[in-house]
Amino acid sequence: MAEAGFPRSLSVSRVNDFLTCPLLYRFRTIDRLPEAPAPAAIMGTLVHSALEDLFALPAAQRTDQAAAELFDKAWSRLQEEDESSATAVADRIETSATLLASYFALEDPTRLAPHALEMGFETALTDDFAIRGYIDRVDVAPDGRIRIVDYKTGKAPSAAFQDKAMFQMKFYALAWWRLHGTIPAMLQLLYLGNTRMLRLEPTESELLATERKVLAVRESIALAARTENFTATPSRLCDWCDHQALCPAKGGTPPPIPPQDLWLERSPITKRS
Ligand code: SF4
Image 1 (spheres, protein in one colour):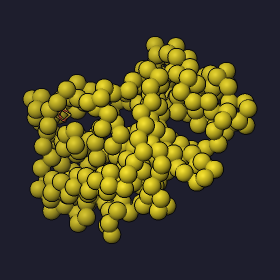
Image 2 (cartoon, rainbow, N blue to C red):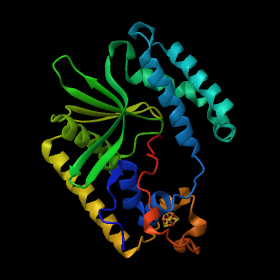
Image 3 (cartoon, protein in one colour):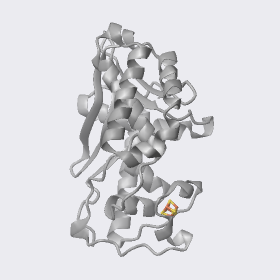
C-alpha cells in the first residue's frame, strides 16, 4: 500500500506531468529515472540567469549590453561546468541575442524594482499537503499591488492553449495568496521567443478553482499510488518523452515500481523553458 498521504507536496511541473501522463509522473517522481536536459530548458536556464543577474545591478546599469555580457558569463560557466549541456545548445547560442532583445522590447528593467527574484515557496493547502515551486519575479507597486512575472524563452501558445499556460501562473498566485493573504493584482507571462506577453488579473474564484484542481490531481495521484497503477496516456507529447523505451504504449516494459519506502517526492522542480 502507498505511504499514507502520498504525495505530500506538488510543484506545478509535477501536476502537469500527471495531467499529461500518469506514467510519466511515476517515472519522474517515483522511479526518478534520469533524463537528458532538453536544449530548450538549458537555454531557458541561461537566459533566466542573465535576467536575474541583470536585476542585481543598479537600475541605470540594466542595459541590453549588460544583459548580453551577463549571458556570456552564464554561457562561459556552463561550458566550464557542464560540457554535455553546453554541447547540446551550442548551435542555439546565437539566438540568445534575439531572446534578450525581445525581453527589452517587452519591459524596461531600469524602471522596475523587483521585490523578489527566483523566489522559492512552499505553502500548505491542507493539513498534510503543500504546493511548492519558484517564482521568477515578484514586483510590488507603490500602492502595494503584487505582480507575478514569469519568463519563457519559447513562443506564446495559441489561444487554445493559453489557459494551460496560465494555470502555472494561477498556481503561483494561489501560493502567494495562501502565504501572504492577498491576491496578486497581475500575472504576467513574457514570451521571449516571439515577443508576446500574456496577462491575467486573477480573481478569487479563479484561484479557488485552481486550488480545487490541484487537490483533485493530488487525490488522483494518491489513488494511483494506492493501486500502484500509473497509466500510460499517449499523446503528441510522447515525442519529447525520454522514457519511450520503457513505456507499454510504445511496446516497452516499465521497470518494477520501487518499494514504497524508497518513494521520494522531492523530485527536482522543472520550470525552465
Ligand atoms: S511515452 Fe508517452 S505514454 Fe509513455 S510514459 Fe512517455 S508520455 Fe507517457
